[in-house]
Amino acid sequence: MVPKIRRGSRTHGLLVYLYGPGKRDEHIDPHLVGSWDGFAPDPGRDTSPDPYPKATLARLTAALDLRVKQAGDCAPVKHVWHCSVRTDPGDRMLTDTEWNTVAQRLVAVTGIAPEGDPDGCRWVAVRHADDHIHILATMVRGDLRRPRMNYDFKKAQAECRRIEKEWGLRRLNPGDGTGSKSPTSAERFKAERTGRPEPSRETLREAVRQALAGAATEEEFFTRLREAGLRVKVRAAPSGDALGYNVALPGDRNRDGEPVWFPGSKLAPDLSLPKIRSRLADDTVDHMTSSAATSGRPDWSPPARARRSAAGIAERAAVLLDDGDEAAAQLVGVGELLDAVAQTSPAATRAELAAAAREFERATRSHVRAERANTRAIRSAARGIIQAGGALGRGEDGGTTAMLVSTLVLVTLAAARWHSARGHAQQAHASRQTAEHLRTAYRQAAATPMRALHDQGRALPEAVRRTHEATIRAALPEQGLRADGTPMKTDALAATLAQAEQAGHDPEALLQQAIAMRELNTAEDVNDVLVWRLRRLAQLPAHPAEATHPQAGARQPTTSTNDLTRNPTAPTAAARPGPDPRTRPPRR
View 1 (spheres, rainbow, N blue to C red):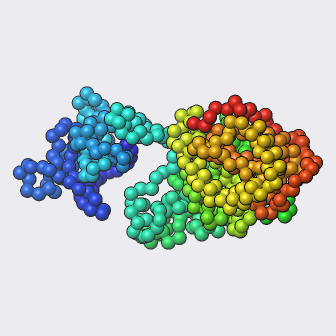
View 2: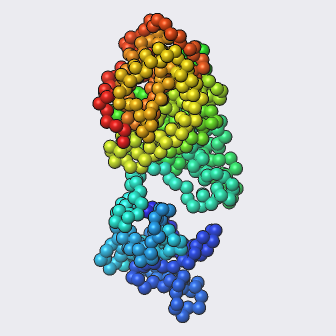
View 3: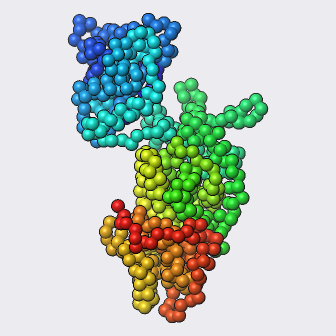
């Protein structure tokens, strides 16, 4: 049950809309379901001697505005309180009597008409559709004072949560006031009329987020906005310093032919210029970009190098989320990383990654204050991906997309746990939804390289395959099943261990290091997670077609775990001791 509160100054105009046909003839049988005294005239079903509904509408307007006129200049300019209340599409249809109870409880809890108060404000509840009502109240009490309505929206939300629980309706996640502003009905109708897939507000919000991802300076941020094709207007003080900014879509104009501008703060709370400046204050992101984007073998493409580096940094962010240290700042960085990956990924995965980035935007905002400390690495990773450009080809670029997305799944699940532990229901839900989008994108990106790895594993000499399968069973004795209970295929993991051994690593030590980096309970497929960790730690090509098939024979010289820990591309978390996988509880 979702309440939506607005304020206005035209009682009659709002009643005309509520009792009218609607903008698309969607208003069916408009009628009162409740009022301040239970005897208000109903223009929809009135049987009084008035010959015309307009006359009844005028009488209802006069009754509602009576105290407003009596208060004269003391009445507020915006004296109309308008609250629409809508049930979830899956809920049962409420009766008129039940909707009357909903209206009475909401006007009481918000201070419009407290229970038992004879001087409460006048109000009516109009129903013109099966799934919602509109409550209209005039904000002058019987004693001609204004009602006390502090935090009316939060109180209405809390009362709706109580009604859902008592009546067995779908229980929505409580909000905390950090969400971005939703498009208005007028904006949605305009998008439909003009053939846009979504309201301008939502398109602009996503474009501004993408322009901010990995930006090093305020000037670069504004340049990216203009390069994205947006109209940008910077508000300047007399000194010339920027005070704020507005953006508009080309071609989006109002009835006067002027561009429809949106301030950054109206797109999302964290997109105001002061909040953006706070995020950009650490300019070391620019100095770290080159090392983050170019580390690794020189034969890898720039997008592949940037994604490999980002995967290691994302692992570190997941550790910080689990520890609770600087988590709020890490969430903002993860959001930028998702925006960067969504902009530059192959077409096959771009839609799901864009949906993941849009969903995670809600998870980046809470009342927990984010500190900038230790976010430079993850913001530099986002910048490196943007600068490296799109991964448009086959082979290594597509494989490293799968490598990075596999890591981001675990990062977003860590974010869900962090939010759940603090009661952030909406943010936790958004994190889990992000993980589902990322899992779909991962399956799309990993299909070809994982198929090749499974083929290589099956083609291994029998003795080599048995040796590596024994190593896997010893390291993961209780991880032989996927999340859905089916047996875990180890062909790709065995092939990766064989290639790592040929490259000079100790397979057992390398596997233990990969296991200890992070928990595996939330992994949909433990085998896949470990494959990508191992290939990144051992500097193996993400696309297995570029690796040579190992042959049976003497073991190559190995590299110790300490040597691997010193690898510059391995995340800091690799050296962190991890729990024994044999003692972990099963995935719920």
